[in-house]
Length: 307
Image 1: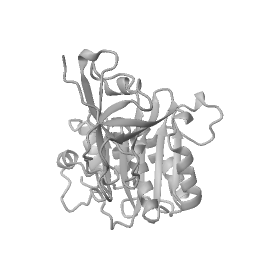
Image 2 (image 1 turned 180 degrees about the vertical axis):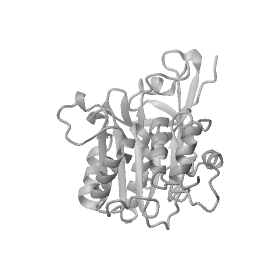
Image 3 (image 1 turned 90 degrees about the vertical axis):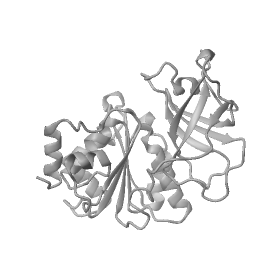
Image 4 (image 1 turned 120 degrees about the vertical axis):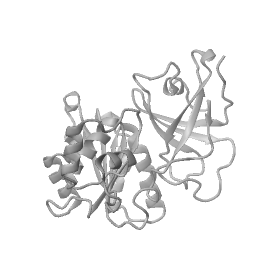
């Protein structure tokens, strides 16, 4: 029999947003460390034992934290039940069978470098554009919540959140309130508007905002000069699946945004002195860019002025 996990945490809250999409609040048995015990943008590893097939034992997966370090009662996660799992023992299938007061495993130490200090740095005063697909919104919710808690302005923060249907827009009410009260630029976008005839907002995938019409919309919403959306004014962080990340890199290269990822920089022969302005955190394992495709590499080099 596979290894069984020893639970050390309790689900203290669960909010189901739509089918297979939920916000979980999980409290560790031990007290959280004092102070800012993690950096917003980091993740923790959640583990559960297989509920339906106990012989498969436990499974663990990293999940981005959505709560802020100042929240002492629980750690919050924004999770989708995977439709086509890659393993025979998928974490989300067992997790979604569990509700409030049920037990799980939560590795106490947060990890990850997809944070403001780990990417652009805390002193960077450019616009921050957070691009997310689905549950890729989670680290940005944590970052924005922490900014508000510490009295930092979010009036130069733009959150793009791409989902299939309006019901999948997690944290929508909270982000709309931050837009009203604190100047956040919040752009939810729905890729299947035909299924939601009442939706009157932006349509298409998150990366669609980087087509020409979308760029003009962004510049208008951000209140910046037409044609000025570039790395001198804006830093971009992208979180989610391969498609959103890869297309964001491709489309934004035409405006001079330099990716930070080492393999991409090496393949493109980006000089060290070219400061990165686009960072990403990936939730799947497919390469975000086919580095063997010379047409793609040529397009990226051209956009970055490397040819």
